[in-house]
Amino acid sequence: MKKNICFLYAILISAYTFAFDWPQEQVIQSDQFYSYFGQLRGDTISNSLIFSEISDVKAADDGYLTIIINEYSDHTDFFPSALGNAVVLSHADNLLTVYGNIDNDSLKKDAFKENSIKAGTVFGTSGNSAWQQGHSSLEFQVIDIKNNTAINPRLLMPRVGKELPLYYNEVFLYGKNGKQYNAATQNVLPSGIYKVYKKRQNIAVPYKTRVAINGTIVDQISYDLLRQDDNQICASGKKNYTKALLYPNRDLQLLGEATLTPGKNALQLTLSDILGKEVNATYLLTIY
Image 1 (cartoon, helix red, strand yellow):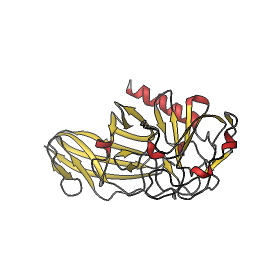
Image 2: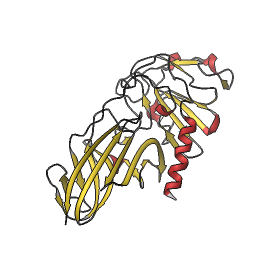
Image 3: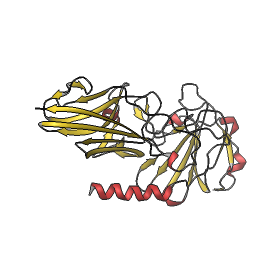
């Protein structure tokens, strides 16, 4: 059943690819966003893509005005008050686009005389109404209301330039007893179920992570979308991973979960960016 769900979502994402134009006038390189989808952001997993420069904000596709959110007036999970002033448009395929952190004085009321909004319609300028620590740029979200998920906006937008490099610095395994092992220096471990973490990069977020044991994939975490589970935003792997599991602290990011059995185990890790470029690492472990 899990494989079928993943397959259906793969089809869903493929259908959406490059469905939207750029949501602001200024085009930036792929490695120059201020904050990325799936990144640790405060006490949650970010379901936004935050741009790096002030710019005019425009509709990414034809749609209909759903709501204009005034600063701090909304308190839902997908539309938090932290968005500040925001415009929400509805589109085909049950998608919403959310344009947050808009300067209140720049909102062009004339753009909303009709509910129908054409792609490219400029309706404001990014400002400093959201909770971005003084950063005055567009906060962009794509919500699939039918499946109650947030979609990585970069899947739907044209991609320009190179990606931020992904790398391993330190890899740790955490057992059920909470004991921590450094995979590079502690290669003799008791059997059991382990969560595999890497030291988190400050900005770059893998699009996918994969954990394999002796060549068999045992877990994959994808950041193509985030879902709500029991009112918590989660990323999907072999189960839904909440922020507490994905980012247990500000230093670590979960790569996946693995069951290690007695004998020789090759722990094989893969980080992938959104263009499919992979970075691999292997750790040889002796399990008793």
